[in-house]
Length: 101
Image (tube, rainbow, N blue to C red; front, side, top):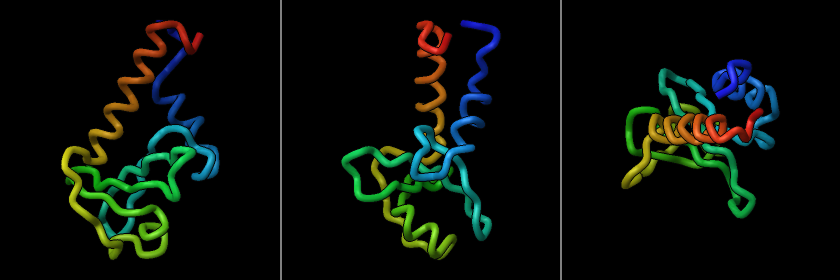
């Protein structure tokens, strides 16, 4: 792994893009609720927002409009923390494989 490459820096640089152009998840907090926003895949109508520590999600447009009053739905196997951990692990593997050199 290159000493010049830092996972946190990669996330910071990605978060400088407008939300619709980001490729990595990011955290947002509103009304005391922290969520992780999952970037929109090309086939999706909208991004999804996962509560940080609960297995619940909602649509980003609902979150952006209503914040903590957005309607969340149960999700069988994903929380915001898990979305973030998977993204960080993916980048770490890519760095180890030399894809970020």
